[in-house]
Image 1 (cartoon, rainbow, N blue to C red):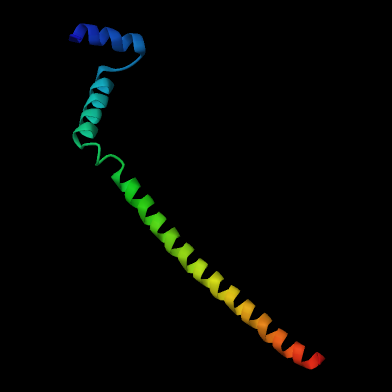
Image 2 (image 1 turned 120 degrees about the horizontal axis):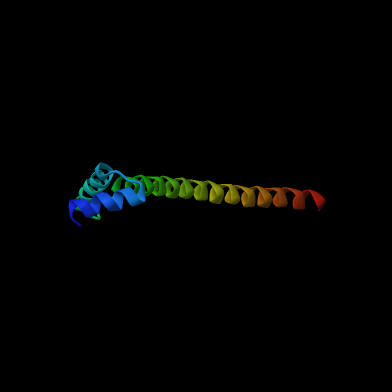
Length: 87
């Protein structure tokens, strides 16, 4: 588009030519940064959060396994002493 056509287009759409130029430069800047750069901080934050959640899950699974083992042992201990008293 030449300048006249661009100005007419912007008037029809209710835009300013300066807005269109600013948007064009922002898009150019974002695209020149490359696809790996766009959203990389969000991905890094998400990966960190996932690692923290996985670590927390492993800790809780270990605690649950330990609690289950203690429960089984306490029931066996009770069974040993109550069986001996009944006889």
